[in-house]
Image: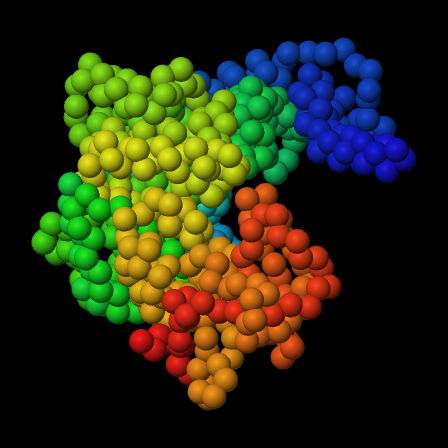
Length: 269
Length: 329
Ligand SMILES: Nc1ncnc2c1ncn2[C@@H]1O[C@H](COP(=O)(O)OP(=O)(O)OP(=O)(O)O)[C@@H](O)[C@H]1O
Ligand SMILES: [Mg+2]
């Protein structure tokens, strides 16, 4: 009983610690620049919408948001299109090297992105991909690919092999096997993977900051543009951040049930 | 309808040889059972016939044609898996009609076929249910139905009854035999249960460590086992094995029904246990040299535990095996 209480308390504390900065950002976005930097921090203040007005006036929020949506969805779809066949073959036709390949794919995530910035930049410039949504979709899907493959691989492995064999005996081609049996059976897992990928792509900043300027810039670029080396900008930055994170927060909140289901997706009976 | 021929088929997983030089001809419409202990390669052999496993050596022919390059989907065989392998996201009817759907059969025709098979299996009431809502025995029927709908050239069944309780097993055994008679289709049936094989099959193939120990009708195997292994595997209770006097290294095998009690026999022993089945009694004895012996006696036999008795072995029930375990005729 006591451990249960302790666990609950620890859970609440962890959730609080993660939520507090968001709450603080949200509150700050309604303060004036002066109250925003006040010490001790002001808890009671007269809320103002000035920051939002200023932020929306200075930049075209809708365009950044549209870019974010297109890039996050596009990257996720592309990553899934590549990862599903890859994970399928690794899960059901493994070779001696399959484990090694998986580990290697994951290890590429340990390479800092800056390490390949220059070659990627030069390539993108050469192929006219700089400041394009396509360019960002390509690099983002490549960067989530290892995680997507890894997750799909683990979900596919949960599908009993005999079910796919039965499908083969029933006369299915590999494509039919994939579309009629494997994908429907691992739907919760694929959904969770897609959600995670969307969130990762949405929050991605490094490549959007370096590969885009105006036309294809996403909300992370939008947010960053409100930080400046001098002057008071906390409140406006908070307003911009709130605008940038709100869509994905709402999205996450709506999809949390599918997400939890996918993460706890056990053996298919 | 199909004959299936194996020509010195072998299978290796890495350096582990699982099936060794198996030669076998399964005739059209024959019901053949593969039996053997766990790990003897029964499933592997069946899966090679199905095309789910590659063949390391030799070749497999269906209706005289080599199927080395034919994928499972094109072999025209149906398989029933031990785990049933029912598609969890489809109803029973969808499971059964899936192969027809893939083959492009029109819906009306599919439905008619499914209904016809469901009637034969007495499972019409289950058709709209999802697998989640079905019991083990019902899933078994769906799996059988799914195989039957396709009208395959042959059925491959891998321990299809092992997940059912004893009563259901006995009932399904009879039903499978009836189906085989009605469908007039080749069937290969894998089991580790020799009773199942004995009661159902036209012919039994006994496998041991990936090799065929003996292939023959149930009675051939029972009456003339080719090796100690087959002698010990076929028949329940097991055949008695006695070290032969005089002939060094030889073994004398004798089934319980060929041992008579208390008739001036050549063996003497003490009764250690009695197994009364009503119609007959199995008498377990320990002979003077320590060997165990089981004898079949009448149901109302008067003997009791601890009795010291003589046992006689009927001449027609003697099986001789040499030092390497082969039968000596
Ligand atoms: N994919 C595989 N990789 C490596 N070894 C395997 C593989 N499949 C089977 N084996 C081995 O092959 C041998 C025979 O297996 P198989 O499944 O054919 O036996 P079985 O006679 O069907 O046994 P059971 O009655 O337990 O089902 C076993 O030793 C098993 O460990
Ligand atoms: Mg097996």
